[in-house]
Length: 199
Ligand SMILES: [Zn+2]
Image 1 (cartoon, rainbow, N blue to C red):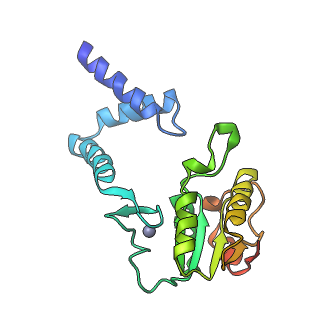
Image 2 (image 1 turned 120 degrees about the vertical axis):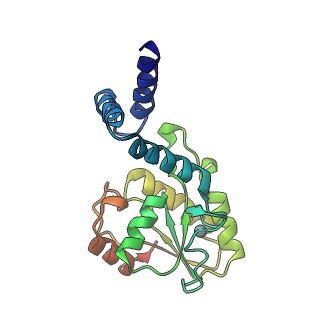
């Protein structure tokens, strides 16, 4: 019984590390997992293992990918001279679901946040600048979140790109300041993309 307690405690501790899951929720989930059928529980474990074994960051754009390049970079029908810069893969997903953007992306994997000790060098900014220098992009759209840090990151990047022969734009301000792209609805995102303006 002592061993069972130890493994349950471990499960609770692991679940409690997930974002938005406090100690109480972790306990509730752990007891749920104990109660459900073995196959069902192991299918969750397998799904976690599969995602960690098969998913990596795209070597071009840092989107999530199965294999070296993501499905967007591998798609020849995407507009190759248009690049949209987002903070996270989930922002990319939100824009994809809005269904109006047909260019390529670059995922920063975060935003510059001095208070959290996150600087430009921890993001994929260097790779972005190299990509724009070496590529044939006509336009780079800054689609960071409309927060102080997202705006600061976009400004920083736009300064780095300013000498290059590329048009830099930003999303229209349909999205409320301080809000997150991933929570904006499709219509607002579609408007933000189509109404984009010079940075
Ligand atoms: Zn990619």
